[in-house]
Image (cartoon, rainbow, N blue to C red; front, top):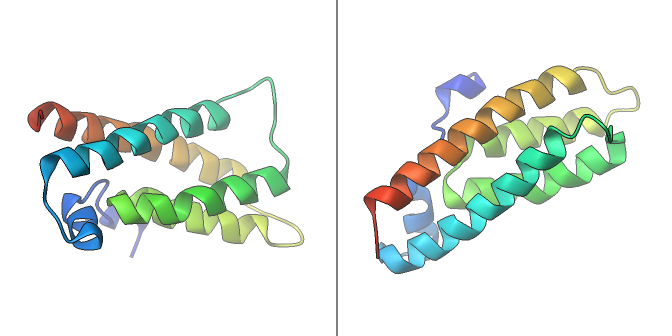
Length: 121
């Protein structure tokens, strides 16, 4: 299975984790995650400050679980893959993985924003 086979955003994931489909509760989680995505996007696209492998590994670890919990399944799997790459003695493929992550972060942001717009409080 490739990353593209995974959903960008699956609302049912968070509904299952929380055992609730209360729109206000879901919105609070999604709004917080959207802020985190903005921080992630900034960290991944900061050309003036190249990240060291240890920083990338920590960033990937931080985001993989929260992404999966809220239903950003593709992002969660890509973060897991980046964490694994960074744990290697000689990491290979970091730049291509970051490129894929940038695209997925943007797609995740768009999907979350669309859900938020469609589900006002």
